[in-house]
Image 1 (cartoon, one colour):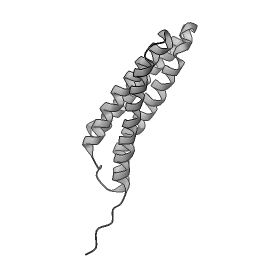
Image 2 (cartoon, helix red, strand yellow):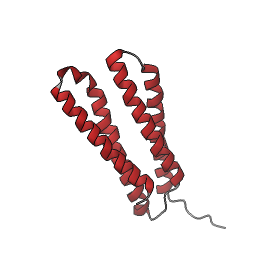
Image 3 (tube, helix red, strand yellow):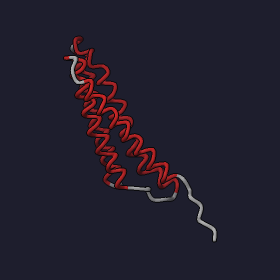
Image 4 (cartoon, rainbow, N blue to C red):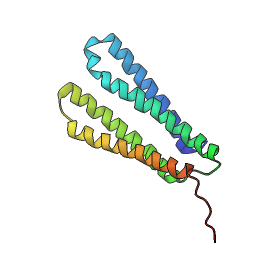
Length: 135
């Protein structure tokens, strides 16, 4: 498996552990229930989506019998998704606790959405069969 696939899978597992830890903290300290949205995003985006990205980058090109359209774009998506999710989580937590950070949270959310668009574009270009040109 290539570095992007492994990066997404390992990072997804790390986010799973963060989500489990945060869930335990929330269950122990009832005042931490305010962090439920952060817990949900860590688990759903961090674990589920990152794992799906990693598996997709490995399997879908093979299913199609074609190489990935752009490994560089996949690596860019990996870093954009990680930085943006981490920033989104931090500024969501600060917004929930202290009421600050909403503008920065929106910036990180937009970058996260852009990383998803990069994935869809890269997979779309990989999966579309372009017929050879007839002369």
